[in-house]
Image (cartoon, rainbow, N blue to C red):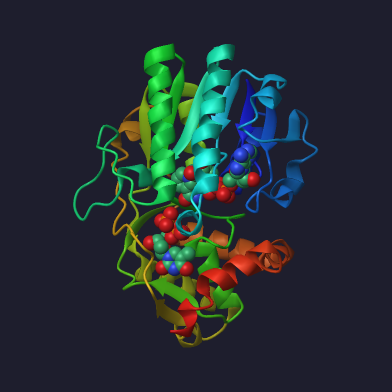
Length: 341
Ligand code: NAD
Ligand code: TYD
């Protein structure tokens, strides 16, 4: 296979490239990424000279640039991915997540190639009870989720109208190495390490289903090779937890690893103003992918969190560069006022 992987300098994309290069060393990989604040070539430092790997700095909205690239399959990770940023300014989300997907769909139509579109469980919205299946109604609540749901609808329309070979995956919340520290789990680890307040939105009773990023990558690999074009696959680890419990669990493990007092770290927990439109519970039913192609997660939460904390402890230079750059301004704008209350 010759894969065009978009957004490969981000969190999941870089983990996916690392996974593909080690499990399919004969594959070609072109990583197309325009390096937004979330794109970081440091995420690929250890593999950048691998045979078969090429990086191109470019925008998925740029159809002319797409025309020049040689590939036979597209895996689309490129996106604006953070809910809080979509509340501050939705425009980049509409551009990349919708118009970017449209440009890739046009390219897939022209090339008659397989298009694997990486979507999210957030398109289904929130539910207090039960689990969303692949044919559940889409009821996105944040501008981010709405832009991803719009892209999913476009993909569906190209399957129906233009008969392109496309597959949509909808995964739950990922965590693991190389995650940008605006997302909950790396934020908690780094704020604990740096003894900074840990902001908990609202009452902290919101529920997320956490999956270790490498398990997500393996699920995409399985679907890429055995998934059925035209189908949608939910990907989840059946690992639901309330945010406050997740945070306490991470603090307990971090205290253990750093040999510091757990009480000192839990003392950093600070309840702040809730996120507007905050989804109470994401919950998907992953039975379809578990049955065929037969994927199951391999890393439980305890093991995944331990590996993640160890990674952030050993990769200080990676995150220090981030927290002293553009992220610093965002963090202050996002939390400055909230943490004063
Ligand atoms: P991320 O924000 O870490 O990375 C996104 C990458 O896309 C960055 O490298 C960025 O530079 C690149 N990018 C953004 N706009 C681009 C454009 N116009 N052209 C080319 N590249 C562009 O995101 P992530 O957490 O790795 O998520 C990857 C994908 O997985 C997204 O589509 C997201 O919606 C989806 N997803 C994420 C999660 C999660 O928990 N993180 C869960 C389910 C699905
Ligand atoms: P996040 O990692 O932003 O993922 P998503 O919103 O896509 O699920 O947030 C995960 C959960 O953690 C979500 O319910 C919001 C909450 N949260 C906090 O309580 N505090 C924080 O500082 C952040 C970033 C998130």
